[in-house]
Length: 258
Image 1 (cartoon, rainbow, N blue to C red):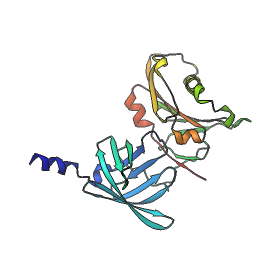
Image 2 (image 1 turned 90 degrees about the vertical axis):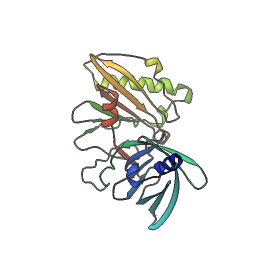
Image 3 (image 1 turned 180 degrees about the vertical axis):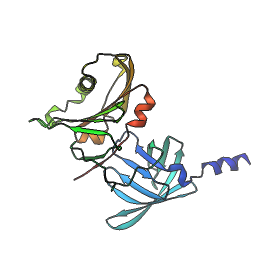
Image 4 (image 1 turned 120 degrees about the horizontal axis):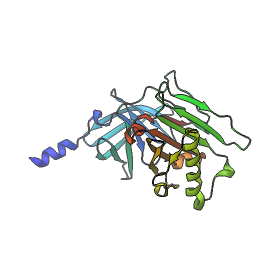
């Protein structure tokens, strides 16, 4: 009896996956499921379609070149924050939940296209968006802030000759990170906490650390996914007060465009 209950509990319902999911360590690869059975795939390829949940499987019906292609994926693991899917060959992909709800359709009128390489970014409503003009080398900063001023996102577009060698990458990104903190708060001083433990790499992992900015605790992240590095893009986020505020507010959708 207990075994039957355990198996039944693992059966996947459509409501279990509603929301947006990011492929682990790849910022631009996302799945978005809504409560009406619609599905959006964004990343290297952009597809729209529908989905079904059947026992321990997710069934995708995607429109690819005007042809509906059906893909069946096995749900290997599913929790509130993590989903592991396996294709018919057994290859697994891990996704982390970004939001509990699927964002508005891509046709929503308030999207803003950011000039950060081949990226188009949809920002949450009322977020400010200030792109700087690129300099002669191609270096460009784009600053995005939440309406309450508690969260800041900085997109740095780097010219090819600024990309460091792998052995210099940690030091290079730490330097950019320090400049970002100072640029976001030019009239404030900050005290580094555990800066030596703030490590970056080309693996795509999101690294984070806590600082104190004047008397305010600060949560900071640097996101260096492989897909973004391919387009010479480094993304920083900075949010005051606590970690949950940063993770809740710094949510946006992005896709590669021609």
